[in-house]
Length: 120
Image 1 (tube, rainbow, N blue to C red):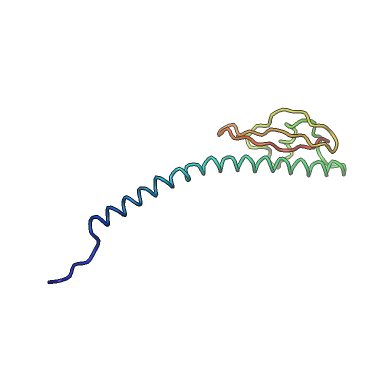
Image 2 (image 1 turned 90 degrees about the horizontal axis):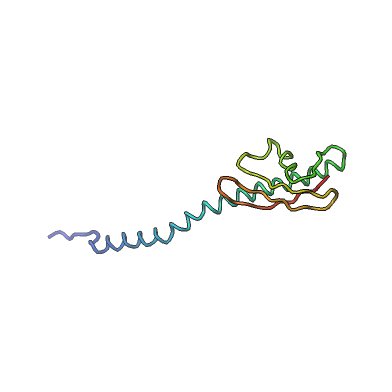
Protein backbone atom coordinates (compact mmCIF):
# COMPACT_ATOMS: atom_id res chain seq x y z
CA UNK A 1 0.00 0.00 0.00
CA UNK A 2 1.24 3.45 -0.92
CA UNK A 3 1.82 5.95 1.90
CA UNK A 4 -0.39 9.04 1.51
CA UNK A 5 0.94 12.49 2.25
CA UNK A 6 -0.65 15.93 2.46
CA UNK A 7 -2.51 18.15 4.85
CA UNK A 8 -5.46 17.01 6.90
CA UNK A 9 -8.76 18.87 6.87
CA UNK A 10 -8.17 20.16 10.41
CA UNK A 11 -4.80 21.63 9.44
CA UNK A 12 -6.33 23.44 6.47
CA UNK A 13 -9.19 24.82 8.58
CA UNK A 14 -6.74 26.07 11.22
CA UNK A 15 -4.72 27.93 8.56
CA UNK A 16 -7.88 29.60 7.28
CA UNK A 17 -8.90 30.59 10.82
CA UNK A 18 -5.45 32.06 11.54
CA UNK A 19 -5.51 34.04 8.28
CA UNK A 20 -8.98 35.33 9.17
CA UNK A 21 -7.82 36.50 12.61
CA UNK A 22 -4.79 38.24 11.09
CA UNK A 23 -7.02 39.99 8.55
CA UNK A 24 -9.38 41.23 11.27
CA UNK A 25 -6.46 42.56 13.34
CA UNK A 26 -4.56 44.14 10.43
CA UNK A 27 -7.49 45.71 8.54
CA UNK A 28 -8.14 48.64 10.94
CA UNK A 29 -4.47 49.60 10.77
CA UNK A 30 -4.55 49.89 6.97
CA UNK A 31 -7.88 51.72 6.98
CA UNK A 32 -6.45 54.30 9.40
CA UNK A 33 -3.49 54.94 7.08
CA UNK A 34 -5.79 56.99 4.84
CA UNK A 35 -6.46 59.49 7.63
CA UNK A 36 -2.76 59.64 8.48
CA UNK A 37 -1.85 60.26 4.84
CA UNK A 38 -4.42 63.06 4.51
CA UNK A 39 -3.09 64.78 7.63
CA UNK A 40 0.49 64.37 6.40
CA UNK A 41 -0.43 66.01 3.08
CA UNK A 42 -1.96 68.98 4.90
CA UNK A 43 1.09 69.24 7.18
CA UNK A 44 3.31 69.19 4.10
CA UNK A 45 1.38 72.03 2.51
CA UNK A 46 1.60 74.02 5.75
CA UNK A 47 5.36 73.47 5.76
CA UNK A 48 5.57 74.70 2.18
CA UNK A 49 3.68 77.86 3.14
CA UNK A 50 6.00 78.48 6.10
CA UNK A 51 9.05 78.04 3.88
CA UNK A 52 7.63 80.30 1.18
CA UNK A 53 6.98 82.98 3.79
CA UNK A 54 10.52 82.76 5.18
CA UNK A 55 12.09 82.90 1.71
CA UNK A 56 9.88 85.83 0.78
CA UNK A 57 10.87 87.68 3.95
CA UNK A 58 14.55 87.25 3.12
CA UNK A 59 13.94 88.40 -0.46
CA UNK A 60 11.91 91.38 0.76
CA UNK A 61 14.82 92.46 2.94
CA UNK A 62 16.92 92.49 -0.23
CA UNK A 63 14.27 94.54 -2.07
CA UNK A 64 12.75 91.79 -4.23
CA UNK A 65 10.04 90.14 -2.13
CA UNK A 66 6.26 90.49 -2.11
CA UNK A 67 4.32 92.39 0.54
CA UNK A 68 2.62 90.18 3.15
CA UNK A 69 0.12 91.79 5.51
CA UNK A 70 -2.35 88.90 5.90
CA UNK A 71 -2.19 85.12 6.04
CA UNK A 72 -4.09 85.09 2.74
CA UNK A 73 -1.15 86.85 1.07
CA UNK A 74 1.10 83.86 1.73
CA UNK A 75 -0.96 81.75 -0.70
CA UNK A 76 0.40 83.76 -3.61
CA UNK A 77 4.00 83.05 -2.64
CA UNK A 78 3.80 79.40 -3.70
CA UNK A 79 4.80 78.71 -7.28
CA UNK A 80 1.52 77.86 -8.97
CA UNK A 81 -0.45 79.12 -5.97
CA UNK A 82 -2.27 77.17 -3.30
CA UNK A 83 -4.26 74.16 -4.59
CA UNK A 84 -8.01 74.83 -4.68
CA UNK A 85 -8.77 72.13 -2.09
CA UNK A 86 -6.98 74.15 0.61
CA UNK A 87 -8.05 77.35 2.33
CA UNK A 88 -6.21 79.80 4.56
CA UNK A 89 -8.06 81.60 7.34
CA UNK A 90 -7.84 85.38 7.11
CA UNK A 91 -5.67 86.82 9.86
CA UNK A 92 -3.39 89.83 9.94
CA UNK A 93 0.36 89.35 9.99
CA UNK A 94 2.58 91.76 11.90
CA UNK A 95 5.36 93.31 9.89
CA UNK A 96 8.98 92.82 10.79
CA UNK A 97 10.64 89.82 12.30
CA UNK A 98 7.55 88.81 14.30
CA UNK A 99 6.13 85.45 13.24
CA UNK A 100 2.37 85.06 13.11
CA UNK A 101 0.56 81.74 13.26
CA UNK A 102 -1.92 81.10 10.45
CA UNK A 103 -4.44 78.31 9.95
CA UNK A 104 -4.59 76.08 6.87
CA UNK A 105 -7.45 73.66 6.23
CA UNK A 106 -8.21 71.08 3.58
CA UNK A 107 -11.78 71.68 2.47
CA UNK A 108 -12.38 68.14 1.17
CA UNK A 109 -11.17 65.88 3.99
CA UNK A 110 -11.40 68.29 6.93
CA UNK A 111 -7.77 68.14 8.05
CA UNK A 112 -6.06 71.28 9.30
CA UNK A 113 -2.61 72.52 10.24
CA UNK A 114 -0.89 75.74 11.22
CA UNK A 115 1.98 77.56 9.57
CA UNK A 116 4.03 80.63 10.38
CA UNK A 117 4.01 83.77 8.30
CA UNK A 118 6.38 86.71 8.45
CA UNK A 119 4.98 90.10 7.54
CA UNK A 120 6.83 92.49 5.29
